[in-house]
Image (cartoon, rainbow, N blue to C red; front, side):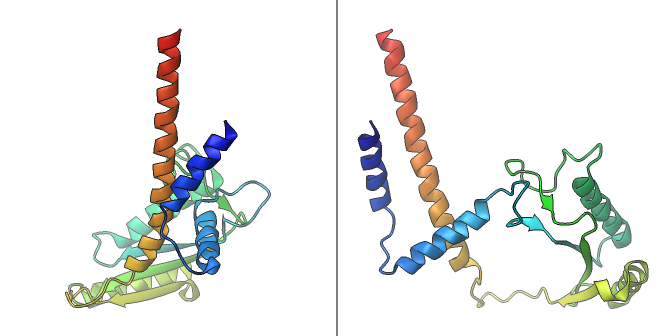
Length: 189
């Protein structure tokens, strides 16, 4: 039975894109492993060292939104009544924090095209006064769209999801095989 399973895996792997260099496969495995790896209690590969809080200066109450984010992060890190409502995806393990008192950095996002410069400066001054100017930064962006710009994330996303799609296809095939064998057992019983 194991030989049959090995042949199935070989046929599935042969449908993957063929690359000339083994370095590509090694880097793809390393990237996929570190992306999908869930942290355990004894390792520090995927523990959180700090938290970056980003608020928009265009919010009605940006400082209030920042306070909500800080409370959510504190509840998630230290537990509490709402710790089950994690900020991450439901299929992932709860995040592991490196230290009880982590580093925190606060970013005020300001759109120079559509935003109010005076309000952004006031929000940044409040945040800096509350959390210290060393831990705060105002990030100014320009939301003007230009259709001629290339998508900088396209290549990275294609590379990351190529392995994910192959794994999901293999999982679907195995599930179909198991359900077919379970149905045949029911028929013979």
